[in-house]
Length: 301
Ligand SMILES: Nc1nc2c(ncn2[C@@H]2O[C@H](COP(=O)(O)OP(=O)(O)OP(=O)(O)O)[C@@H](O)[C@H]2O)c(=O)[nH]1
Ligand SMILES: [Mg+2]
Image (cartoon, rainbow, N blue to C red; front, side, top):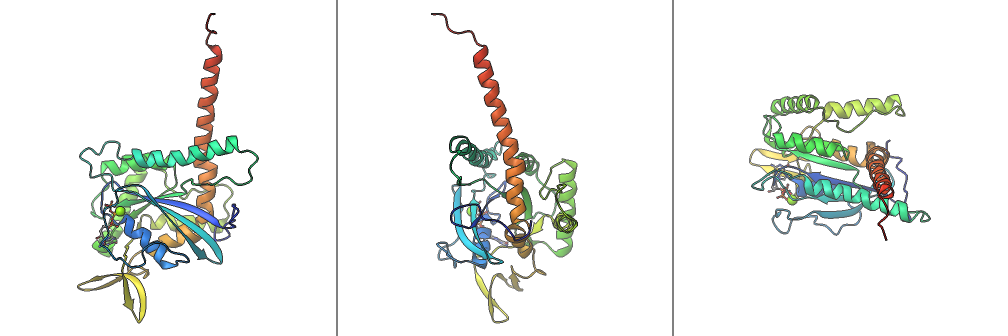
């Protein structure tokens, strides 16, 4: 775990791919992508300041930047998705994202099977899905439960309370408790997992993350000046929410989690658990279909 992520590609750079998803539009997915990248950008082709008002995302779109964390060059790929849940029929709103995640597994498996001699296989597998929850303060919607169940079976899932500046601290704490109780009730297995190979320090770190989930986040595309320093923030009539201030929201914890403390483990868990499950199912299906073909009588001449 921790920041000693090992590069496994020719560019000598660690690569991690994350996707943001929710069951409705406008919860701040695109804003969070920009907030994450704005904090320590090394090379940026993205927006550092909004020149146009954020627009509703219409298609799955990959954003990619290199950041430096603890001296490790990290290529972050963040996949932004449209809010699918406002469609008249919410049924199957998870289809595009589930397909996207499986397609990446499929592409990796194909390359693994065909390009055995290549030392490096380009890896576009998704290491974490950040799931945005509407800050209603009430409960999760049934569609959230359905989607979380589907996603947690194929990818590491980390839930966040979107736009948490709309909740008071008491509301936030009560909402978190309710969400976690619901997830437990529905037996939804969230990341991080406690494997046998983890030491006491790592188990303790996981426990601390679990106690904090879902991260209550705030995103912003604007820079505001706080104590003479430019920071990402949201200016309200009553004051400024500084997204980097841990007493205002938990954005910094989410960022540390994704880019430092759990980076390596997210990558390993994806490969060892989610991809392995996908891979063995695919190979079994392949074996069964070729066995069936062999059983079929040869066509008579
Ligand atoms: N109060 C508050 N507003 C936010 C926050 N994050 C984003 N917003 C605002 O919410 C609106 C929608 O943000 P987007 O980032 O476009 O939301 P989205 O989830 O990408 O929307 P779709 O692409 O349509 O699904 C914008 O006006 C943002 O400024 C937040 O943390 N707090
Ligand atoms: Mg968007």
